[in-house]
Image (cartoon, rainbow, N blue to C red; front, side, top):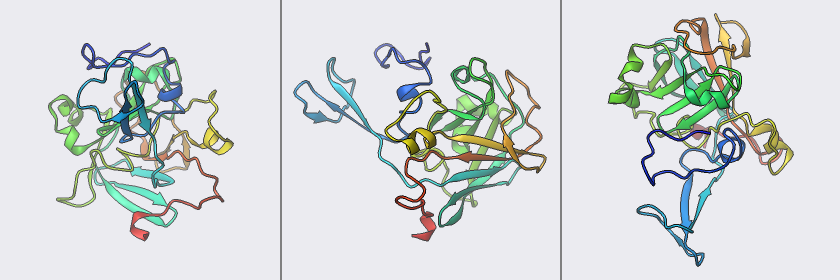
Length: 256
């Protein structure tokens, strides 16, 4: 259904999996998951080039300590705060706030208020119903300075986030936002290994409009440069697989 435009000949694995399902949905591994290969005799190896035909690729998705949710204040200098069981932790600051939606193609396979894609340089949020196109992106400041993303400084479809303090480390490729936590959702028709995983392994994005109560993401399609200017706060709920009264809540790194 889709082929990555950046993937050259021999640089992609094309599957018959339906877009937004299986490893592209409820069973997707988080960013930063370890990848190993096994040869025809079952011996593991680390690929330094393209794997050989017939070898097996394994993606090891190990659980990580993630917050319950992350809140972003949609204003210049707004706080990016992760909420753990042990308390809040400020991850960064909003450098450039969000204002509108754009035509991000992959959102056609996703539903409103869900994560369309996540990699070390982006969180792509869908604002359109499945089957239509519309969304916005959250990107770290270092990526925003790359040649391909310089337009984000002039457009409203990107929120740019940076370090919590002047001179601090950039958020690119770091958890919980850009590694180890988020997954595509909603995969509502898929069943995982138990009830809690099936129910909880689905990130959700809510908003506050003009400082009001938390509400569902407005359903918006296409490019609308000013459609989200009333959004004052964004909350991203992280996926979970453990029972709330099971192994205990996630703890803040600062509380260890």
